[in-house]
Amino acid sequence: MQQKSAPQRLLWAQFDALQMGSGWDEEDVKKPQILLEDAFGDSHPGSTHLSGIMEQVKYGVFEKGGYPARYHTTDICDGCAQGHDGMNYVLASREAICDMIEVHGSVFPWDGMILSASCDKSIPAQLKAAARLDLPTIFIPGGSMRPGPNMTTSLLAGDISLRQKRNDGVTEQELLDYKRTGSPSWGACTFLGTASTMQCMAEALGLTLPGAALMPATMRDIFAYARKAGRMILSLAEKGLCVSKILTKEAFENAIIVHSAIGGSTNATIHLPSIARELGIELEPELFDEINHKVPHLGNINPSGQHLTETFWFAGGVPMVELYLKDMLHLDVMTVTGKTLGENLEDLQRDNFFNRNIGYLHNYGLKRDEVIFPVEKAEEKGSIAILRGNLAPEGSVIKYSACRQEMREHKGPARVFNREEDAYQAVAEGNIEPGDIIVIRYEGPRGSGMPEMLMTTEAIVCDEKLNGTVSLVTDGRFSGATRGAAIGHVSPEAASGGPLAFIETGDIIAYSVEHRSLDVVGIQGKEMPPDQVAQVLAERAKKGVIPRPPRKGIYKRYTSHALSAMQGAGYDD
Image (cartoon, rainbow, N blue to C red; front, side):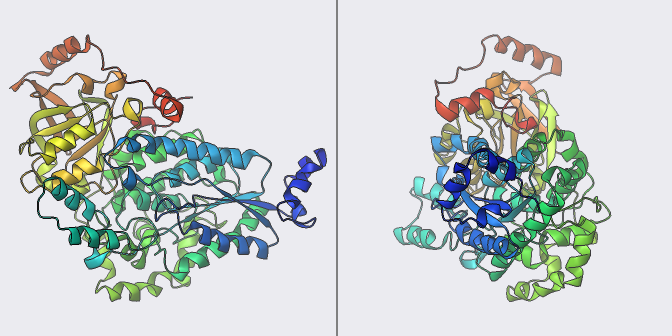
């Protein structure tokens, strides 16, 4: 195949000299050149193993006559940012990582690209960059972490941290044991949080090899997939099969269907539209809602269900869900195999993929239909809903699959906080009452960078008095691990003058998943007709919003230009 960068090499002899000074030789510089970009770093378990994965990719590229060049744009961990201002940078990091990969991918014409990441923001960042660069590209998910003792996850931290603050029976030994076992290996946390969800979304979009999402990060399979991807990228480059030929509107619809079926993170309602935007495709919030009305919820995966992500992969993973839902999917979409989704599923069946790993599932005493329900056993439709009303004219999001049935509709008094830290403190100190609706505002994209509220939602569900009685409403976002009645992404956000900025403690809020509604229905404890509520909010709005403190650097750039959460929370063009 013709090397894309051949014309540029003729312009300036230093091009080849610099590459040869990096260890290439005169034959290497003539080969198809493949950019290997990963999120490798020492910062957290989702990044530490990616270098080994890319080493296998490198061998595969060499085998097929290409030459790989390794680049790294590492990510950060949401778990290390909980409860302090570091969380305000997390969503902004998605844009920074994407921009850096764009720089790496634009320095000269690459023939193809392979990406690898495990976690919340690095995966959507890499997929955004792939859409922006539009090269032949394969994404390799970093897989799942091993389970903790007794099939637990790292989210034992929620209960332990709350009891620590209340001096409520946490011994030094219990704390030490958790630290030693809470994250027992590398890979993404083993619940269906945003990291695991986005691995599944990459596969459902057709950008991974079939069956790649959520395989255990410690098993040989992940290296085999990596080597295969290295071989395959040369074929994609020769065919000119670029990202724009794979990421079609139909591919995004497939991803939303899979997301609905597995009970994925609400953050996908930010990330998928932001990826699509790079290709000029608009994903309206109503599309998520429409699909969630129709698709059976099949994934019995924590936090919406019982089981952990590696068992989901053993049960057949994303391909099993696609097989069950094939009548709902666009089976003719193209994928990185050079084949359609329908052809990939047929190949997996011939290769015995769906039965080969069932024995691993049996090691846990589980059967497939306990982890991935067949359609006829699904008890409900969908997993998330878009709520609108006078408190969220542009929309808001709730993951009702992780919410008790009795809390899918609720009316109660607002307890209003202008920052999450204060709300968490109120929960920890016992100052929230059953039936309250906690409001946390000025935490949207322009307010403070749209941090996640996992620390507060976990404090609520770990409090016996509050669990199942208290709701949370915010213009911020949630971890994919969030449980309970948690409504986020309220738009317009408070910092942009949305109605959320003008409610007060004591006002009455009502929401309903069934009716897809979120409204202020009373003022200072007294229910009122909608027109009177509107008058009061309009009068309060004359005072304006609380000014945001001065900022600098990327934090200032992001919070000054971020789009609404309903538009993907990327940069405003």
